[in-house]
Length: 440
Image (cartoon, rainbow, N blue to C red; front, side, top):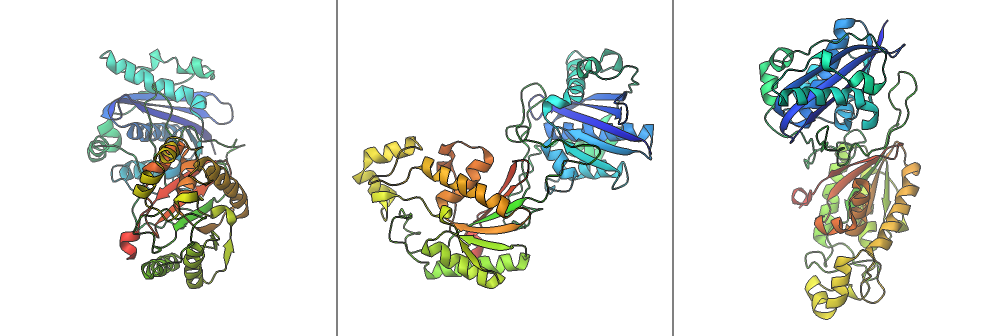
């Protein structure tokens, strides 16, 4: 059985904007370039262009040998994860593209691998050649390709011109592909947040092939993949992050950290915890429960764990920030009493609340250390972490690589759920939920 390597890429100068794709088919044994394809697509999004490059590469490989095995290498994390089945495809315009790609070869004959953009120069250059040719009012021709020289591949290639959009995918799919953005951010509150497979749905904010890498995908690390197997990252450690239910201080929006009165849940908070417990029990995938040592989190965790038939493990690193002299005060009261300290706290993660509280920088270090302990301890498992506003926001901030000031730009309701999946290659993916409205 013949074996091919397909490398594909796509770009959109404007996203959506003038776009194109490129793909190359290589002989897996010799590395020889067998086929090059490229095409200008008109105005579409970057993700559409990438999927179109994948389709063109798979079809070119099928024309060479419909019985071959194919290994696809792309620098689009979105396409690789969706086609590998690890990420859901929720956007209606993406589903037909993925379905079409899955039908080119029988299931099991195509594997996928994410590669850094620097390792995908051949396909990237083809995509840019197609866009450049269109800008000149010309159609891309295999004769003009310099990608082979740039990629350092073997000589003697056979290049073919790609099909048009209408002939390749069908007018319905092509029209759908031109309609909008393809950021597949899976944030619906009813999704299965507590399964490792579902919790890693991410968004691909691709830029075009000339203007830079993805904001959060192309920077992800990868593991070298020997032979034909895709990178074996294993099942992730999935943290389902649950903020505790309401306390008497929650509706009043008072600072309630680890240095205050340590309130218990209110009747509303207990009801919220019961509803979360019922929801997680229906899904049935949480395998462990870990909680902050504070009363409100221990009570929330106990209600959920009892429903799931699990024990609660206490983790000191999940406690809330110590807000010092601000404990029990509203934001307005802190502004009135400690204006200078509050301004400093809002402007610098190193500033501490009045009276020796804990800075956000210190909280970040504590949460990162806690994460580093828990990830290997729960590799391949789904664990419920019951914590507080600041630690949960910090988990999300660190996973996204966001700056410290992003903490002030997140809202986290009582008894809300979020999820972070951590892979062996160091990458993480995030899903956000605010289900309180469903839990009251």
